[in-house]
Length: 196
Image (cartoon, rainbow, N blue to C red; front, side, top):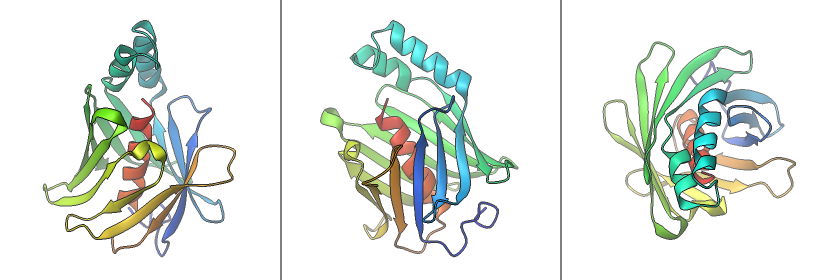
């Protein structure tokens, strides 16, 4: 998937939240802002979650956020040429969500679990398709700056919000030896969940 998404040989990326997109989508670019791939959300699912959340008090209420978080979602990984290369399925819950990334043949590549604590804390972990631990991070991820580590605690990637950007944009710097698609998708899903 690395070659198909244009990630080979790259260690530094920009992840941009597409605020005006219909399905809560994210664009991944290289440091020269060349588009590499997009994670596109399903507009209908996103709308239904937001409507249900609005009925129960909106994003300013506990019940509204809980309803929006509990909506199951699907996303598509699309390369710069518009070809779908994989899917991400979200199973929502009040304080925990699970995301499964599969390639275009349906083979499960990795599973991310995000758990919310009190006071804005999020713990996120990822395991490979066969259940081996891969990635982890925790803390107050709402601050947009965090480190992604492997199971031994070694740093694999650093994520920090770009200082000057029209849209929400994050720098993702790959530090360890890992397929970059995993920390990039991990970052996108953390960002999606923390705004709910």
